[in-house]
Every structure is written in C-alpha cells, then in structure tokens.
Length: 149
Image (cartoon, rainbow, N blue to C red; front, top):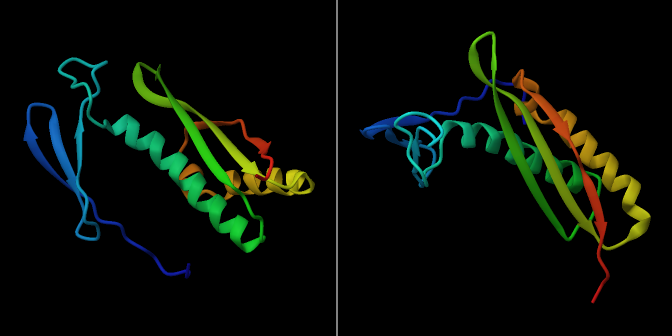
C-alpha cells in the first residue's frame, strides 16, 4: 500500500421502514441493512450497523494476518475468527464499548507455534480498523496444531 490517501465509497438507499441497501460503485454485491431487533422498530434476520462494525474489526484482522503470514512465510491450514461486540451505555449514550476477537489458527507444524502466535499479535496491533476506533479490543488468539493426513 502506498502512502497516498485512499477513499472507499459506500452508498445507502433507504428501502422501507428501518431497512436500507448498501452498495458501492467499486463492488458488485449489495448488503441489506436494518436496525437490529433489540431496538424499537428493529428487524430480525438482516445485517445491522452493529454487525458491520464488529465485522470490520474481524475482517481487518483476517486480511492483516494473511498479509503478514505471507510475508513471514508462515503456512497455515485454517483461520477462523469469532468476534462479539458489546453494546453498553456510556454517559447516557449507546456505544460499542468492547469487541472480543477470538481468532483460531490451525497450523500443521508445532515448531511454528510461537511464530504463529507472534504473527497473530502483530496482525491485531497492525489492523488499521482497530487503530481507528476507540472501542476496546479483547484479543484471545488460539493456535491449534493439526495432524497431517
């Protein structure tokens, strides 16, 4: 990535009630979004701004991890990232106060366990989304060793 500034355009079209559609001229897919069901007028079964906020942290971790792993020549079998956002009130206003990020990395060679753990930690520190928000990130990485078949 160069040092120049980048822009990412997202457009929202209101559909009805508490539902809208996100799109971008840079992307093919659209995402339906709505107020989450925990709020008055919320809609079940549709991505909410809260889901998208938490997913931006987990997907940024994944993309950052993969880039660092490739650069470091770490081979891995699988990466799963579970993320949970905690909504709470601060000064009488709702905020996403915490996100628990639980990445599980699977490698096949135990001798790379420490290296894998370090790369996971570097990825969490380097994630530009995490660095851009004030939400506290609780990071709980796990490295699994899988037997080769």
